[in-house]
Image (tube, rainbow, N blue to C red; front, top):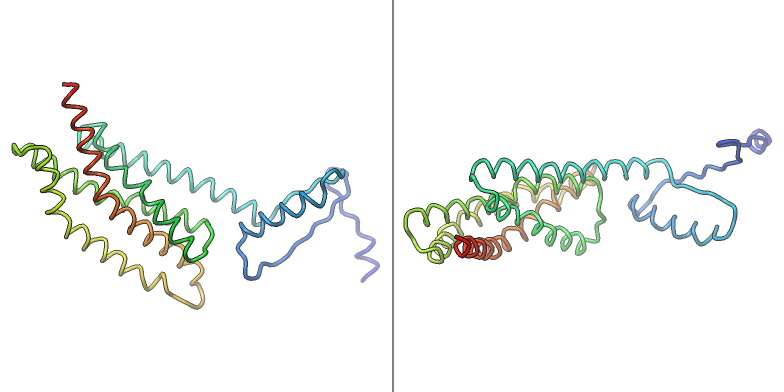
Length: 230
């Protein structure tokens, strides 16, 4: 058997090739890929040897690209829907400020828990793109109603923020509590559920808190600019 193995010479494009495979233990695929690339780059520097990482890492890169496209498409579709609902191009942009605010919480919680970015994290962000705008929609819609009823713009912003604070916090808290069992789960399948739940929780916390501050400010700024132009 040993002689048969030694006598086997693999070729790729008429060139001799060697395939090295390994299982991962205590490290994620992305981190392992980065470390392997660093080692091989140093090891084969200046040598006439070509190497490439294949297998599951190729599939990981493909899935991440498709998920990034899904995130962009979901944000675009949300913008189109909001633009038709509010009959404005500026107000949907204000509402979508909540989406990048999710990144703060996602990056923070992944850093604290020492978790890497994976396909499930991207899936969680796709979910966040739809959930995080709810707070902005409620705020902007309430502000519009107050202003249309004749209230001063600044008073409408302050009043809307105060009145909607409790419902917004309650909605966010109930969503986070519902995701907690998934985030702290252990055992079989926990590795598949945890990153998604943790991503959504971290993103919701940051987007809710920051949206309550940023969206009213941006709304006031754009309203002032619009009024000056008129």
